[in-house]
Length: 262
Length: 292
Image 1 (tube, helix red, strand yellow):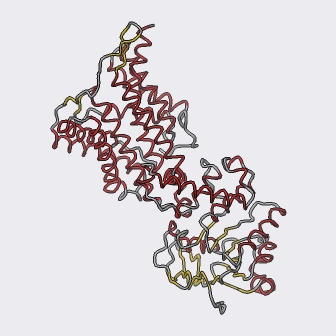
Image 2 (cartoon, helix red, strand yellow; image 1 turned 30 degrees about the horizontal axis):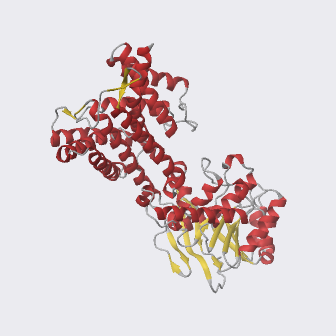
Image 3 (cartoon, chains in turn orange, blue; image 1 turned 90 degrees about the horizontal axis):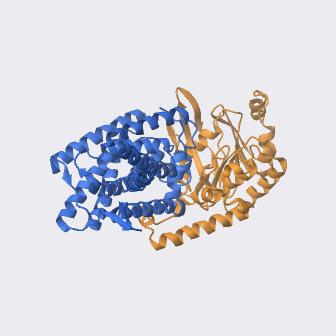
């Protein structure tokens, strides 16, 4: 059985993606679409292949077959470092911050693709590289202020509480001003109060940005998502609005088959 | 007591050169987890380039600048021709390859400039400075060496903390995949690291050349001291490389002065062994374990 939703303007879509890693079929004919300006969820039991979908879109995993389209244009070669140029930013499971860089430096790094001056100009400390660096710094601080972490700018990630680290990681993704945000378990390890903040934050980004959300916390997913794709064992088993997906027998079976999931 | 202090003072400029070479090793190690044994070969090659420029033009400063540019280019060539094709191999293969590059560069220098030791002209007064009624064991040239080293260390720290490429280098060294996701072109950053290490090594070569002669193998001993300093310093710490480089210079000067100079490498290797036994991560190292 194959789910195809009649999507009119998907800003990001995968078409028949198949991935085999060491003989295991991780993704089997996965076609999903993310309508522009929505929060779209990608859920499924552990090992369903959700992060692999992100890895394919990010260029870390090369699919055996299938294609990725952004704004209807097929991507030929996907390089991770080109992602932000395409207007896509991704956060990682956990936080993935650089422990030896300050919070501000971590956030500034997310704007690397916006730095236009060349390596040699920077190494020779050409004057225009200073203004560019100052602009990036200002921009990074503005986004940290938006997320309420500007007072931690000069701290190292290891000194910060986990929920703050998660916000710094979000700020790093936002600094490139992405039109598409891929969030990999943004609610992992944070409290109920922080979760409510996160939900408000995510909903504040749309419709300017489009969000693809991988998440285990069903409460958050059901609250913020306009559309949900459900993966199980590498296949799309259901898709629809939260109300539809919640009652889908195939989804219930997939989750109940995995005790303790979700 | 006077002689003890004199030996220490006399060791500082040599220590500065060792520190620079150790920095070059650390720059490559941080980026690629490879100890670049070819670094002294690259420095020796660029020092011969500098010698040629100096002979032709008589300008020490111009020779230094040309050597720095040549060092950057040679670093990039070594990375592209040897290290990049080997990036899928394990690091021990890459380290052995850098040995091969060292030998190839020594052979190349022998073919181009001959195998005989040549004198490198003294650009500044090399006599001990006279002050407070005595001659000190440090010359104007030593001050130039120390000054250039300090400037270079300051420039490097500004590069690492104030520029995007510096930020990208620090991030790529820690986790290249996450750096890529943030939009960093990690392969370019790596290449820049090889160029930068080449520049620093080239400066070390030109600075140390007048105090000895230059021949294809002159700098091999510098490798021993710089490697010792870099490893004891923790291999991924620039501060460690500078501190231990200068410290090595002082120890060598003391050992050479109080016994004879042939004992200096032995002392260096004993210190290296002791350090690896007692503090395997190095004095300034902050990574947990080193894959050997």
